[in-house]
Length: 351
Image (cartoon, rainbow, N blue to C red; front, side, top):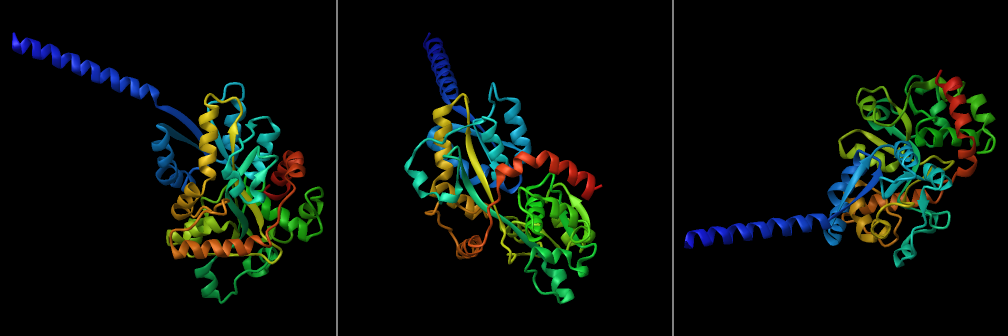
């Protein structure tokens, strides 16, 4: 009889434990955040997001993809959002805001710590990663040839780089579009007049291009094989390649680099508006951005974020110096004409 009572007691205790665990599990909510894959996803998944998950008893799932991929997913699900927060390149984010996909990031003391240039369109989106597109080069190849480091966007048109320029597609990549628009400015054009760029690109930089690539994923391979000498890239991407032992260096063009911010927005009408705002505020915090800097070379927009190492502090100081000459593009004009430009680029340049 004692054994039978013990058995019943044990069974009831086990049942209570299972019910308690199921209830706890049911209380754990899940947020979905869209962002670039690769280094960005790794840094956030492994280092930035866990403290937020622990503090708020929530699971944050990354939906990886390019900015264009994430925008397409958000647009397709506009009436029934599947994501809660998304991180997009600034130019793509302007399109997302114009499409009604974002809601304003709520007022919070952390917003006062963000550099003004990172706050877009009345805080409908705010930068979490401040970047820039400039020039990068194959340090090993340059040393072997005795070439000086590049100093101008027009260096890509130098005859010595024949079949050694790698250029990202301006119709598919922010890096390629930035480089083309800076070339266009040098030729006398602007974001509202790209005729000089289209007229002169093929006979200058274009004739040196060994390959137009849709993204920068292939650059590391082409540097190691010696095919790629010079190409548009960001300091963050350069530092990530260097961390892997790829012999590349960043060079700030004398005409200026192009500001490239990765911005966040809270997706309008999502299923967890309060928790989504809380996540957005956390990603803007000095704590989160310091973790992103140390573990992903991701440059903070929060002025209070600190690097954990002397090497990271040196990178941050160099970046801030280069930002003094960085250019901001007219994204309203760009997005208004981008579909037509893409067709012209694919027809005239990459044909």
